[in-house]
Length: 178
Image (tube, rainbow, N blue to C red; front, side, top):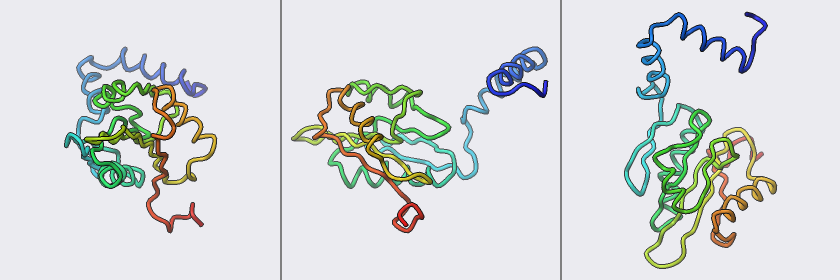
């Protein structure tokens, strides 16, 4: 039906698939579309604390995210632990959700979360939380966004003095800075 769009179109497509495709073909399609196979251009990100790796969909934002996780976290934190990693196609990583929950951070994929959250768990001293916004086409963290991110921390019992907000760009020569 050419008049369908949005959720109605998605529901109609799903109903057609269930009526017309073999159940095993549907299972194969679902697995294949979930990102289980490496795709050309994917960016592999290695967590500093565990060595666990994630694949991010190709693109400039993935490269910036990789640097934020692998380089920035190591540069700023004595013992960095990544507790949240989000991209436009995968909003939440269940493998990291437990660490976030242990901190009291509510990771709701429907919420406006930062792209990366990592904490510093030093041998001595207080825990410090870093919220990183990866910016490929938008501007830096605004006052409104700052308030929203600090509210997330406050709900987890993390005082503002132990939170750092970072906007990660590809470089100072990007048009956003000009």
